[in-house]
Every structure is written in structure tokens, then in C-alpha cells.
Length: 256
Image (cartoon, rainbow, N blue to C red; front, side, top):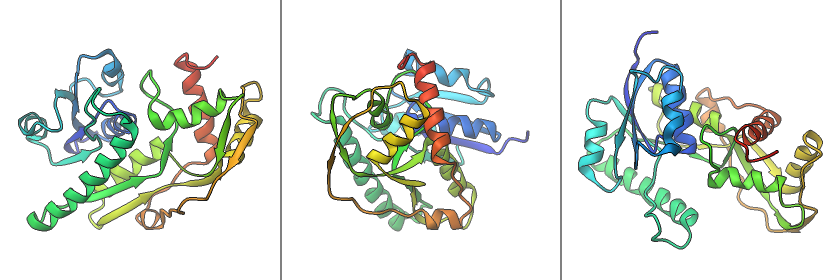
């Protein structure tokens, strides 16, 4: 396979980042991946990816440290900025902080792009679920995982906008490779109320402990990936995502 170029992926060990690195390697790219601690055991899965030997370099980098990021990005044709800084042990709600930091980072990126004529394209996914390459649960996977465990608890019966993590990786690569890609892309595939999602899981896996009580809440905003689909993006069926998610939880020892 001919080499397609060299790219940098920030947050290479994260949920989306790991799948993006896997996809890039499979498509012939050389990848620079940034991590807080490349030697941490939680990042060991990256070195086991197909084609990683000789094609994947991992860099210790702090997103708030210009010099460490510059070292990782040097020599690359493009950057997939997947990560966002969350100071360890310094915030009360890391998940909310992450959401805020991603929102602010995107806004700043657009402002800088206007001033510098930098070519920036953003992909904004909804709730990301699917199989894991890491051995530990991330925040978005926990949303699905807890539905298999919370038999005694009441959960909100809200509309879930869902997309498979592998389809997010495909979307990121698609907008990078398509010269006509521009602006902002919403990346979502399925819309399901929590109760309907639980019903689907129960039919597939009847032996888990599912929530029995649901609290009705106001429906959130509806999202559309029509712009991304016009670019050629496709997504897999929800049942495939659910089956592959549960299988990965089982293989990781998180579920019996």
C-alpha cells in the first residue's frame, strides 16, 4: 500500500482517537499520536494495532504546552485535533469541563482560521458509542454500559442522538481527504428514546439487569448529518453498534 502522508492525531489513546489511528494506519498513513504518558499501560493497545510498527510514533505532549505539540506536529501534512485539555484532579466535573473546552477550542479555531487563512474543518458528533479498543470505559460508553447494569435505578427517558465510534473515525478521515469539505459537519446516525434503546438491548441480551423506571424529560434539539452524508458519509445499523459494543465490554471483562 502506498504511503498517503503523515498526520498527527492528538489524544491518540482516547476513545475516538484510538479508532481514528487504527483507520489511518489501515489506509496507509503514517501517524504521530500525542499522549500525556506514552508509557502508560492504558495506551498499550495502540502498539498492538495492525501496521503500527514503523508507521506509528507516540509523543508525550501537553495540549497547553506549545513546544511539545510542535514537536509532534512537525513534518505532518495535517492534524486531527481530537483531544481537549482536562486538568487532572483540578475540576469537579471532568465531563462537563471537557464539553466546555471542546466548544471553546472550536470557536478559537474558527477565529484563528479567519485571521490566518488556515484550512479548518470540524466534525461534531452526537453521543458516541460502539466497541472499545481501550480496556477501560470512557464517559460516552458509560451511558450505554449503565443501561445493562442499572436494574434498580430510574433513568431519564430522553431522546438519544447516537453515532458509532467507527463511523466518527470514517467521518474525520472523509472530511480530511475530500478537497470540497468545508465548515462544520454534524455527525449523528440514529435517534432513539432511552426506553426504546433499552428494549432493543433487552431483545438482544435478555439476561442483563435493565432499568425498569423511566422519567420523562423534555426532548432535546434534533441534529442532522445531511451535510456530511452529501459528502459521501455512511453509517452502520444501530443493532450492529449495540452488538459490537456489548461484545467489547464482555471481552474486556466489564460484563459477564
